Amino acid sequence: MIPIILGVSVIIFCILSVTPGDPGTFILGAGGTQADVDELNRKLGYDLPAWQRYFKYMFGALRLDLGTSYMTKLSVLDEVLAKAPVSVSVAFLGILTSLVIGIPLGVLSAVKQYSLLDAIPTFLAIFLAAAPSFWVGLMLMVFFSVKLGWLPSQGITSIKGYFMPMLSLGLIYGAQTLRFTRSSMLETIRQDYVRTAKAKGASERAVIWKHAMQNALLPVITVTGNNFGALLGGAIVTETLFGLPGLGTYIVAGIKAKDIPVVMGGTISLAILFSIVMLLMDLLYAYVDPRIKAKYAGNRG
Amino acid sequence: MEAMKSYASDGAITMKKPSQIKEIWRRFRKNKLAMAGLIVLSVMILAAVFAEQIGTYQSAIAMDVKNKLQNPSWQHIFGTDGYGRDLFIRCVHGGRVSLFIGFAASIAGMLCGGILGMISAYYGNKFDNAVMRTLDVFSAIPTILLALTLVAALGQGIVNIIVALVISRIPAFARIVRASTLGVVDQDYIEAARAGGTSDYHIMLKHIIPNIVGPLIVQTTMNVSSMILQTASLSFLGLGISAPRPEWGALISEAKEYIRIKPFMILFPGLCIILASASINLLGDGLRDALDPRLKS
Image 1 (tube, rainbow over the protein chains, first blue to last red):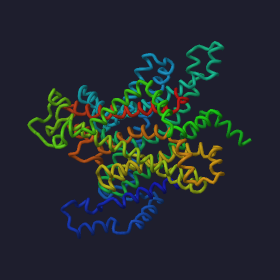
Image 2 (image 1 turned 60 degrees about the vertical axis):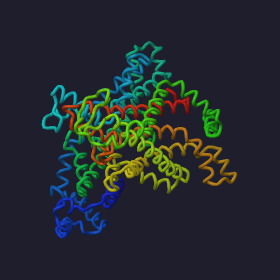
Image 3 (image 1 turned 90 degrees about the vertical axis):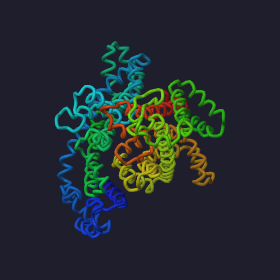
Image 4 (image 1 turned 120 degrees about the horizontal axis):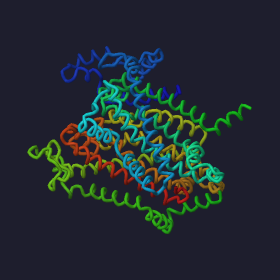
């Protein structure tokens, strides 16, 4: 995990270093004279060569000092700690919604293959999988904010603000979950042990939900884990659209203003969150897949 | 095992024997959804190629404030935007940019990532390890974020966006190709070629590539649609194609301003993206089933 985070910091720092422009010019705008700009850059420590700035930054980061934003002068660590919970909860709610939408519909369309109950969800999944996330969000906005006036289109001043981001992420990732659940379920219900369960007289419901589900859901868990990781950063677009104060909007603003401490701090925190999620997913997978448990038990013994 | 081997050698002939391609086409044609995807995509590509004949680029960017914000009518089937420009013509010209970026970035990403993944799997050991660890690092950065910082560094513009998308997509392609190369590199026929003194370069070109090309074509096709979506997202975040050049994502973000009065302005470019990327996905699904009938679900 630590080498990955170090690697991420090097890559992002390198890209930022070759990005044209300097913070002094950005802050002072067109009005600043060259002398003012140079003076400001010196104060920000931007006059040093890139590799020196990198090491200075990383030694600071070791002591949990992520520096201060060039633009706002606020501590990056404080900002990140305030914004990360928003991103994590939006990603979590989105994934949860996607599971609630995707798994039942996926199982249903697999069990009723080739019927209308299969065709409609599959068609919707094809449609949503092809739609840009911000377009889906905008359509929800047209419906819930403009036509019905039920929900605020921007910000999360009340709990209502979470609804549309949650739903738009849930719909898009739900489409994916549906497709995976469907194909995995189709494969499972043709297995011999499912036929055995049916033959011994277990009810259709018990066969589907108890015997088949357990195995069919394993690949879905993997996909969900990857999606959750991707969503932490991938929700940038959704965060921007709904004006959520999360890590995504923070980093995008930083990139546009070449605010290096902001982008570095934000990206490193994202990479840390991403690694933690991946670790948790591995643990969860080992917990739900008896084969993995058995393998480790065998190794120990 | 026996079946797999005979399939693998069939795959090797795919590139040479027209009868194989005919066979694939016969299987592909049976898939109605995939055929629909192929037809819709072909129409959209034709519209993009002949965009200039449908409405000149000049008319797609020239402002005509008198006719601004008109509802869809026979004269302007998608209506007009805030500067009085015909939205249909802008969508057609937007398709030119979006589809070009999608295909170019996908093919270039496949070539760069594919070569890296294949060489890495073929030589294995330390080199493979180094490549894979580096790719792990890249994968910990969300693709859109990597593309965003790269576009900020390189500057906006079609070529720079393609470069940024290619770099952010290399890890995924390298991984896929590495995995499928690892599946063939231990096969007896590779061993035989090596024993016969065939050069590494020749083995990769003549014996490995033909055996992994099927799934790779499918991945590249599917990838076109995610590249189109990524380009649209970049434009939406303000670091994509810059005005006045139309691009599907940029058209949606321009229309966002008028969400309260003219929501249809958001609808049409969005439907263009969905139509294009859904057709590409269906086409990819169909190709996968046609190339490898065993995988058919």
